[in-house]
Length: 253
Ligand code: 13P
Image 1: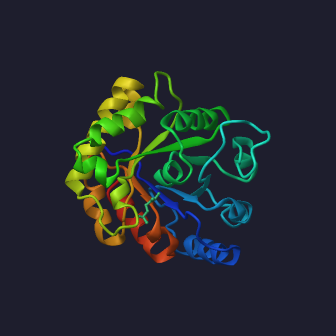
Image 2: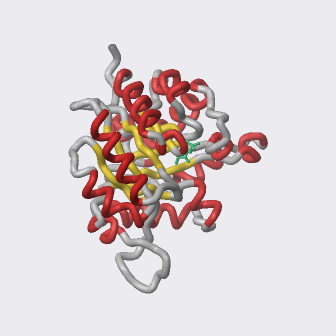
Image 3: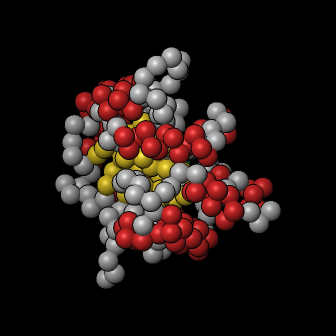
């Protein structure tokens, strides 16, 4: 069996679930999770759910993350959340540059870089999201776009991070990337990280795939050598589906 990076399975709940629903989910998850799941499991609920979930998930098998952070430590930034506030709410991870933030809030590549830096400064592990739109892929610009997104964030001696490749056309569309297409991009991302950051770190860093991941397509995706786990939207809202994907990813470890 080949050496593998520890699989990472993350659920991005976006703007879904109320506190009671989140509570029920946590109970279901913990009751049915293997004692030693052989995968790192992270949940990214929306901000108002964080403190309740930190209490409900007081368990070393599951970590919590914020969906975004402001680069500043504190200040007059209405509607934003800082790294220290996320830590205080029980987070150890944070998403940076999700395509919905880039599109809905006009987040630039440079701003995503500042957010990732702030995360590291505060002891949060950034999960940095990159990916091309359908129009960019059709125009043959996929690698150019990814290159631009990567080089705005990464430099030598960058701290500990995880990268997520989420092609925008695959998010919420039911049209997952094929395992071969995703593998081609993941290999490119790993190669560029070796050049931008450090070859050793690039070899061990987890690169997750996101975009219509479900129990039905997870096994074929995780079988690819450079796909180390998943960032899941819709399917992570259902504890049975989320657990099924965790088991498939762990079985590939
Ligand atoms: P879906 O799994 O719903 O396609 O969402 C993917 C995503 O955006 C996770 O961050």
